[in-house]
Length: 236
Ligand code: CA
Image (cartoon, rainbow, N blue to C red; front, side, top):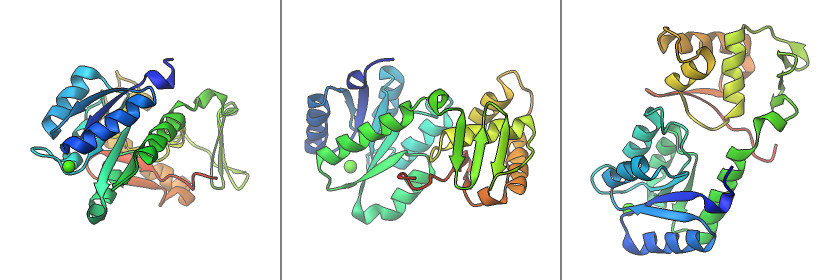
């Protein structure tokens, strides 16, 4: 795996001064940068440059940041691409929409470049945590998933799950806070050659919620995209 300092970051920002400032700081930290000044250009650059992360301004000419985010999340190649959104204080409701649409984090303008760099590094760290060294356990509140035993317990009482329910839950627990599209879940849990429809995912999520009422509110349905597991307090 490439060292974190050689990662490539796409900055999509139409304000020249802010764009230059962000690039300067990122390059000082050893990141490679590419930039775009409109939403359309941003989408093109994602295709061409294949960045490791996107810093995406909300207010952009042509296609705004929310739409860019939505399009990136709905394409399988970019569904998991890390996105940090830049928003202004006045756009707080949009920020919430941005997070629902799958931005991984956001930074409110005016911001210090140091804060942005810190958030980017934190996001990379979070994503690079290897699931395999988690001693084969996932915890979420009272729930514990033991991968080796293929067992899920809530308050130490076993909850029997089917293989697909287990797979779905594992993928959610592995990616807290991220929107997982129905296609991604289908491909990961059922496999690429599965002939079912995305409806299958909805049915299984509903059953999972019935078996695990404590996750009822934690598994959030994201309009027209898929599902996400609400992130627990990061210090937990
Ligand atoms: Ca802007």
